[in-house]
Length: 436
Image (cartoon, rainbow, N blue to C red; front, side, top):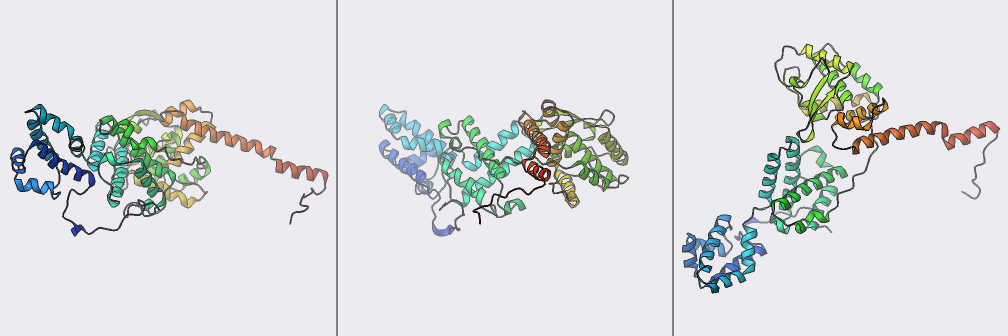
């Protein structure tokens, strides 16, 4: 049974007064006394050197006060001064390997602090707000799980098996975080598990680069990336999109806005965030060129065809008096968010069609129809803002499947059997002898 899948019951906080009660800290505290004995240093003398009271030192040694980086710095300087007085004392201090290692490890930031430092580092690197939110949410949930299961917050004690337990917890547990989005109330897809793996991979790789852990101590080296099933690319039939466009009143602001958004997503393959963040200065209604800020803060140009351009111009005419910088507004003249656009598109499911109405499905629809119309994967990569050809090739494969289906219409073996039977005018044998 996995001990880390179900969080343990709460523990009585008053069961012990001990603050520093893990095994490593106990070893560290024992080495303080051991080193004092070897150096002939009394508690009173050590406390005086540290600038703290004898009582406070006693509390620390009994584990009733938290060991802080400031205390470690003081005790390190004090013992270094003693050891420098003679070669004998220097050898004594050097022989206390566990003690020195204890000062090095406990003085480092704990796991929660390192996660905070990681997020600051990523922000300094210029990562987008959505990327920062992605890392923050996933790593905060990892910290919650670690705390619930009593896992030490010393990063050096995080082993590969613990991370496996965490990924299994994510994969197999409904209502994983007790609170949160509705999606976390149900079992996740492997794509969600992969998202947590990627967050942990980025975090521990950063720890290695920062020198917080050694390369060989990185637990993620032993965790292969989860396998995410490759699904068939789904697009939205163009006749359904036409039905959605006809559903709105183009003379009303909201109707004109929704039509312009749908046609822009269809004609450019923009991501949801790229579309939602557009400003008036990003668009050129005359040429139809639009500046888009994509993943990794990379800017690219996309182009609107005549139909989408006319829809955008019409919307701009209706919102002409509004001075807001953002492109998409509601009836009150306020900016609509990513969630607002997403909700508008999801409501189109009432049209049926057995398709998934989402901004990303429009991205699929753009790519598939661009290739159907004679486009190539290389220009598709540029227009869609993909870093490599992996996704454009994926869409090409989907198109080849369509070609195969068209050939199958005339080459279906089962249909040929029926054709031959019809031609001969006789009933084909069932070959069911001996089968009950």
